[in-house]
Image (cartoon, rainbow, N blue to C red; front, side, top):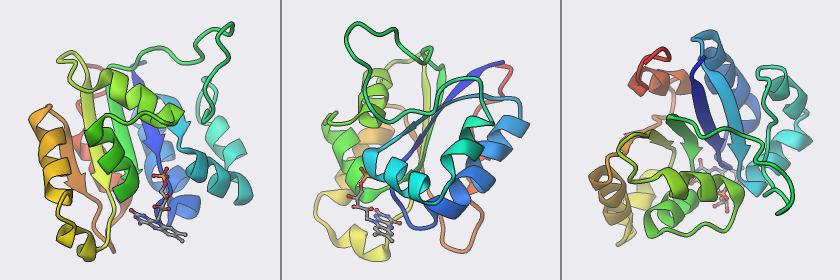
Length: 169
Ligand SMILES: Cc1cc2nc3c(=O)[nH]c(=O)nc-3n(C[C@H](O)[C@H](O)[C@H](O)COP(=O)(O)O)c2cc1C
């Protein structure tokens, strides 16, 4: 099975939709999930009682914290990443190369590697496009080969799974 690095950040609906509209459908399509959450996303999913359901979808640990130096790396290097839902905050940090949590560390390490496919599905309010740096962040990621899509309000997040390459590739 091909490993999919599934990265989640703290966007509205995460506590209900991350498992049902992203993780479970991705697993059903044959991906082996390596799930990494931002600290806030972990907190939200923990509070919602969702972490156990996520863990049941994969043989790899669901993680948020970094490992200790003496510990082995808990996830293999995925050839494909799906960062969804991606918050404005985390998109900006990824574009700038900021890696102040485990989710952004794994994405930042993979960004620009031509052997790795990264899909970013971001969810932001329309007002985010008034921020002077926002479009530049999206352009930076696209220029690095990232497949950047907006998660539209009212549409299932699982639509973004169609942007991934086939899991057997
Ligand atoms: C209920 C709630 C819903 C939110 N929804 C979004 C969202 O859809 N998109 C977004 O960019 N930020 C949203 N935020 C703000 C982020 O959670 C906040 O910017 C956070 O610092 C992002 O951290 P992270 O990117 O490390 O997960 C929301 C916050 C709350 C409390």
